[in-house]
Image (cartoon, rainbow, N blue to C red; front, top):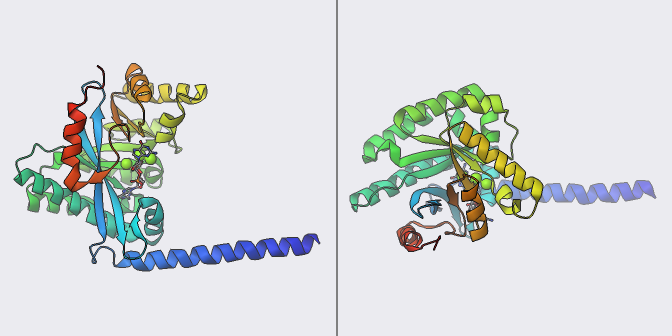
Length: 284
Ligand code: C2E
Ligand code: MG
Ligand code: MG
Ligand code: MG
């Protein structure tokens, strides 16, 4: 009996694996032409100075308008792209699109808000990534300071020396670097200290649990204290309530991002959203 049970379980498991494999190949195949078919689009989410209510920057988040699946979020395709190296092509499209958006806003006479893009490990390790950015910036006339880069802990740990070199090259040009999703990886503190990072972004899981769970609260406090001790800007992601915003300010985290202010929105809508946020008096 045990044996037949074991077998039926493994059949279910194998079928699941096969359909996952199939799904993977389908997505991989469709992703191959996503860039050339113009199916990718950027959404922008504001980063807010919690004390003044001013928007201090934007984060660019990629979406995929799939012909049959519709509007897809990164959860569906970034890991597929990372496993197949398509991520390099996608993220180079993201770099180009973010810089093109800035060039357009510059031409329209707007004061530029820095746009942060998310990079994967493969991008950092890819040949001439910084040179590619240099050329895009030079061609567009957009200042390097209008761009920022976010990298997760796990992306950095693969190749620490190379990561450090690339980040130094970015900083040298005036492109600020942020450690994204902090607290979910395993980076050693001594390594973190050596990296040229201007900001540390606390993962949203901490923000979501800190007011419900005493341990999460203490951890979040510790992360903020650590970032401040290393003289980094500390940013909270996933801020959804006024209570979270108040707690963050009381504990020294002065920049926030989240649905409380705005979800990521299209390029056409982002400036309306920025205006609305800045008209709001959160502390009254
Ligand atoms: P991330 O960089 O940590 O981005 C934050 C994610 O949290 C975004 O999800 C954002 O929409 C979501 N978020 C923002 N505020 C809130 C909130 O208040 N509550 C909740 N529950 N969620 C919130 P999104 O856009 O689905 O992106 C997921 C991840 O995909 C990103 O996490 C980033 O790691 C990756 N990603 C996004 N765009 C790119 C890209 O262009 N290139 C690469 N390599 N990765 C990307
Ligand atoms: Mg990010
Ligand atoms: Mg993040
Ligand atoms: Mg995150």
